[in-house]
Amino acid sequence: MIVGARVDFRLIHGQVGNLWANARQVSRFMVVDDQVAEDATQKQVLRMATPATCKLSVLPVEKAAANILAGKYDAQRLFIVVKKPEVYVKLAKAGVKFDEIILGNITSTNITKSYNRNINCGQDDVDALNELQSMGVPMVIQLTPQNSPETFKP
Image (cartoon, rainbow, N blue to C red; front, top):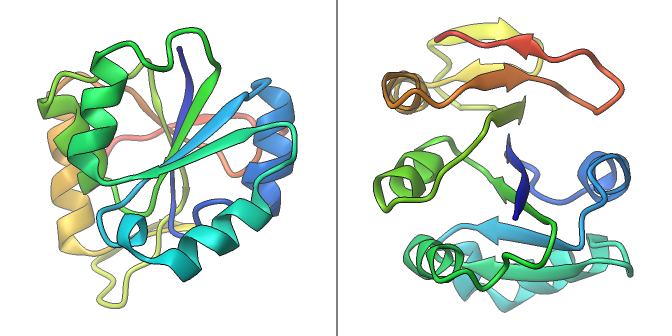
C-alpha cells in the first residue's frame, strides 16, 4: 500500500530517510526516475541513504507503474519519491491512485513561480501540478512530518 508520495529533488536524504520513514512506518522506498534507474552510482548513493529497516526500489516510470498496478507492493508500506511532479502525472495516467502528493523540495533553474522557500517551480512543474489538480489529486506542502501540511493549489 502507498503510504506516501513525495516530490523532493534530493530524493532520499535525512528528512525522507529518517523522519518520513518513521512517521509513516515505511517498509519500502521507491524512487521513480528514468535516468536515476539507469545510473549505478546514483542508485548506490540512494542505497546508502536508505534506512537499514527499509527496502529500496529505483525504477523507471513504466516499470514502477506496472509493479504498483500488479499489486507487487500491496503487503508493504510503500513511500514513493520523485524529483519532478511530471512523474506523478505519468503514474496517474497509467492508473496509479494517490491519496495525496506531498510537495517537499522542488527547485528549478528557470524559476517562474515561488510558492514558498522550498517550492520553486519552473513552467513544466506548474503545468504538471495543474494537471494533477485537474485529475483530482490532493497536494500539500509539507517539509517534514512535524510540519503541518498546507493545502497546495497551483
